[in-house]
Length: 502
Image: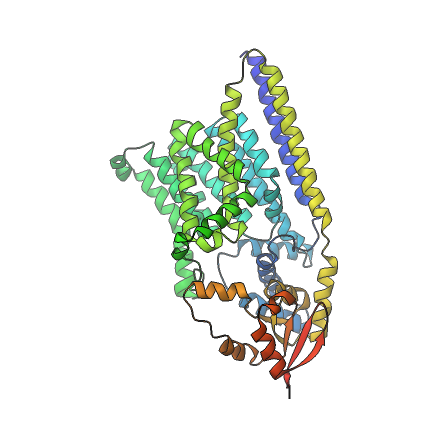
């Protein structure tokens, strides 16, 4: 192809990439200030309580009761992974001079966009510029990616860090300098530090990359490989030692996670496939798998096979969550995007030469139309929901109960809405899914003993999950038999735990 035509094609791909970033960023900022109840609110409000506690810790003029409550709620949430998103959000509150939950959404969007930039660079390194186009279009504008990447969770940061780690490893392999191996080790280590499950996507990928480019005996002698390994694992090891043995707050992070008994249950596999279908699209995922296994260049096939292997090891390790929690699939968006990039690059490279210009024009038009359609669909989805009345309900309920009250409850999102907007100390009563999970783990659940312990020292038992109450008739019988019902509406049921029913 003449140089001038190659330049024209390059500008076409760059224009499509730019359009993907413009549309992907714009739609994510739409409806920015609405409450974070559109995507796994339990997980988002967990982080919101932590960030609020961090912020109120710095305030000197806050009411004493609010400051005490914010700090208590923060500490009650415990420590799962390094609270990076929460700390950045609290810092944003300080800059603004007030608590604005949309700050967390901005951070999540920025991190996902950063991941998109490095995905583009990585796909270009692995396949070519055309491959990076479809990878970025999918990563930025696939419906689930739009919604999930706005959430106040560490996943946006983790996925971005994983992608950056992959990119750094590829750059090191292409140019094995000491600077590049240090950069690769630190960036891979950052991904694992952000959230430990990233190790499932970093370690197998690195293993595949190394084993397909080095002889095994040479790997053992390679000082740069050892440095890469040490730098990649050191940050999390240090954090784990600090969390488990020094401050002793990390001991419970892996409880109720490992369920190998599910591996022999056909329903587990059907549910897992269902999660893949809802998050990345089953047909799209299978196309991506074909791209990774068939169309990827030989030099990078080990890396890409490692990504798939890591995902499946991750899924079997966290079998309950991979089949029930859709956001556990978020790293798969990046893996699938790379597979699509491999397929697209192969398609473009093998277009008929006779009408290549027309073919490229059609492809560009289809991709641009797809991007605008997906961006509009996401905008419509966001416009449909308005949670302002929802937050006011919890504020009023908090005022009604009193901010000094201690509440047990069968509440929406485990009581996080009442805790956050109502400023109330809440302990959630188990729903049937929680009971089933504990039984699945082999734990005996004595509901009567658990109930007696739960109401001890509490002021109210509050119920907003009416369907769940109907599934626990023993709970309703215990409440009716022992305590006074003081409110019963379509929205909320309240028992006074001070007043014993005669």
